[in-house]
Image (cartoon, rainbow, N blue to C red; front, side):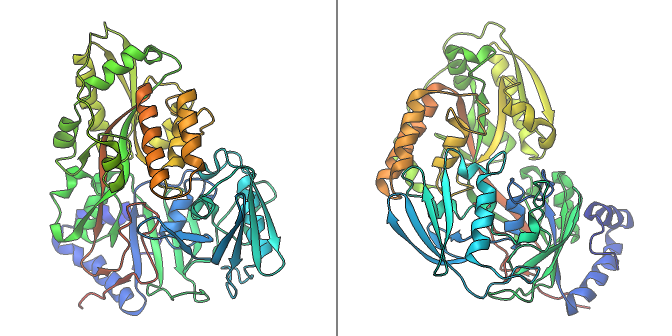
Length: 504
């Protein structure tokens, strides 16, 4: 039997080279293992960008593997629920108290304490760069003598519990925090699976943590491979090399047994970001012309084969309240001609559809009089250039409620003057004012109305052209049960996830 950390691509290549009849050989070996101690084999979309640091986007991998936990979790409606905190109260506009769960062990055997919670959260507030969920947020965190933690915000913030649900604010053991500032999650979380091995950008291995405070895991472990090539991920599902596969490309979905495909509308918008600070799109007229040239329906029909929803705003059908508050958008047609303005249109290959979107967009923009040059790379190679504003236009697949379950943090991050993910280089007083108003309101209908007003202000600048809303296309083998199908991409393998033993 292959070692659990053997590259999925190597196992897949072996399976394919042996032919369909020979696939039973590695499958039989894996079935033998599963009969006594089943493990989940995952094909993940992207490799880690920061060595699985929980203070980066890699935190969402730790969350999807149930390795690291936060004080708060979000339910299906985005409502905060207890996790490592058993409850909380708002003492005044800026002060919250969280009661810390007793009897929780970290993976290294140390105890969860209020002091440990404080240390983890303070480390996040001092990180450079800060986690997105803390953009523009100043927190003071102290231990309360009676088994609690006090969180004080510099400004009125009604979403502190939502913020503390972000995987980037996971609570880790002291051993995770190194003197050089790096954070290692190996054997440092509190979840039902303990991270045992990180193999760079190739794979990771996790085992069941038998000291878990909650429901024990039914799997004995997780073997996660990073497979950025969408065709390879789909082949891993078809051949049985992987049990659960992230982000099946639309182009591959039709080639797979429909019983293995699970599709869920998600709060992820495919958006064209236009550089408002420099280059041709510093001209608002050209931004309007580009927006009018985009044929959203054609993108959905041709690239996504109907497995997406045409966008009328930044927020899609995963947030059903948005459309009702937004109303029917006014139709607009492109006015004038770009006159041969030269633009660089960039995107990344990690999501298989995006290069195809770029090809179709190039045609549409060319028809509007632009001269288009493409720059397409892997995400880790292009992110820094995108954030530095080195492109005129950038196609991004963006999760709109990834961090807090509320879209305000995404809007602040991407479109405010102080935003840390401001690819459009936008700084607009009206936008900042609407975002500040939305940020100050408690969760509920009034906040939702303010969010749509902020969306309208952003779209009025022409900095972003929402094109379509994606859907989760997740692959699962027939024997997999209780895997999470999470629109927010926070959960994947849960304690209840199981894999039925294959027949001998």
